[in-house]
Image (cartoon, rainbow, N blue to C red; front, side, top):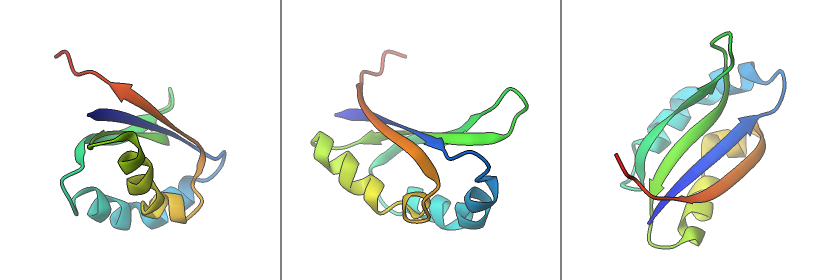
Length: 89
């Protein structure tokens, strides 16, 4: 099952994002759950969140994966949403 993880950064937390980015990228690449991933951007091109497409067996696996993300552990996100996703193209 594919799950879209949509996370919005806390306001004025770009330095938290930058400080934890290398560990976050390592975590994205550490297993087989991540299908696609990248930052959400403001109109000015500043990173303001994350979109991660996870390929997991059940929705709870996506939540468990998220709990170990260095960004989550650093307190970067204001909100995290999990939405079942169906790839068409």
